Length: 324
Ligand SMILES: C[S@@+](CC[C@H](N)C(=O)[O-])C[C@H]1O[C@@H](n2cnc3c(N)ncnc32)[C@H](O)[C@@H]1O
Image 1: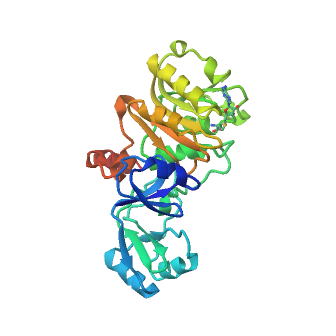
Image 2: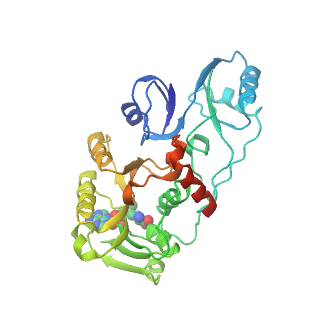
């Protein structure tokens, strides 16, 4: 059995994504089958165990006997969860800095799925409680909060453009993503029908084009190391756009927000997943949207991949930690 904690509001999507669902407790989905990279999971509990816990002290004893660091998810009985957590060693996970180190210690997750039934997992995919990536925000420079999505990808998932890379930022207004890319020393071609904030448009390495993202001709764009899109559009339209840029071979790495509305259109998401090398993530900073990532040479996101238990990726994680 594996337990998956759904991103907030996406339990139904997760239930349809993971195989052999056995039980659901709030956002916690217990499943018989393994799903290597569920898009809708905020955290994966790799080795869940279910035990009887007749009392609060019994639950505390059990958890302490396994390891030091725990975070809880409460589908119900919040007060009872709190009484248990208060008797466990304090775990302080401060918001992380942009490109800062990830929390180092192994963090387990636990939950009372019934009043006297404790479910716990010592190994989880996310080093953050319930996969919530809180970051030290910059409330002064970026003109929108959308920058937090890129900060999360670059910091918590361990990939990012290098200084000097040529980036295309589609749907860029008012300029949060363009600001992040410029901070990294990238050369940014920033495209939106709406204008950039004045401070962003004035950055020396930013070139703004007042145009529809769909009107650009990939062959005329030259080499693009990274294509970013946060354009508000139907997923079908975004899919066609990235297919066009991939077919013309002008863009190498992609980070795109798939904007969803109403009932989630799972078949279209499946089409994104089918593109070789695709990785789909619901970031903590995503709203009703998913982030689609496709890296050069089908490279996997090192942190996410290792957290899913893939040993081959650990080298990549060390590299990320060393950089941080
Ligand atoms: C969520 S906002 C982008 C926020 C931006 N990433 C930031 O960090 O500030 C979505 C943007 O998509 C733009 N947009 C919508 N349709 C577009 C199109 N056809 N071409 C380019 N931009 C478009 C909107 O003008 C809007 O600025």
